[in-house]
Amino acid sequence: VSYKCFFMSHPAFQRWSLPALFVLCGMAVAFIRSSSESNGVAPETLPYLIAWQYAILAALGGGALILIFSRAKSRIGWEAVLTLALFLGVWFWFLLVLPLQIALLLAATLTVVALVFRRVILHDIFLLLGAMGVAINLASWLPGGMLLMVLAAFTVYDTVAGAPDGPIVELAKSLIARQIVPGVILPARPQDLSLAVSSALKTPAVFLGAGDVVLPLTLVSRAAMSGLLPALIVTGGLSLGAIVLVGRKDLHPRAALLPLAAGVALPFLVLTLLGLI
Image (tube, rainbow, N blue to C red; front, side, top):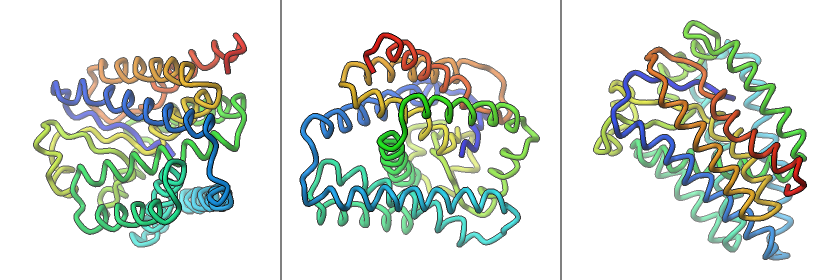
């Protein structure tokens, strides 16, 4: 779910780091997905990939149910769903390129480290890897047309419900008040990446919801199934959307998905019409 992007200031670090984040994530998804598509997956790993696809969908479904019944106040329940989905995403990501045992060890280690130390840099790495894994997984299940429709539906909802006093912003604020951060934190200064998450939330930081990362990257992953070049072109469009996002000057919480969705969907649609995806 797209939780919002809180822009409380626009220092130079945030202006270039947000587009750079999407460039790096898009390129990572493009290379990993196109590589696994061309080289194939080890036969002994395939059953685990299939099982993990179902597990990720189950975790996301559980999260959706919690959102529907969002009156729940339990921090443990919210954090368990978020951590489970991200852990499965990280493991799925590593399974594409590493042996099963090593992938499990790395995913479990990163999960424990992120939960125990709760530093901004560790939180962001864990969330981004998990988000990329979930995006790759969803793109392998759904056709391109369906992904476009899902992105469009969430963008409309994000725009309508993402007003400063809208339900999504209120939900995000309630989660953050319970020290649950379902998104990427981009601090105002590079040195603030070493801050504790709780301390960083008191600074003029940018908060980008996990859904704002996952949903656009599904199209990058789907494009990568047709080759590296289409995926890089779609990543370029996503990066332009991120530049438009940080170029706006209003400082209140607002929906972040619209420029990102437009940036990634337009080149994806053009390439689809040209028969390149």
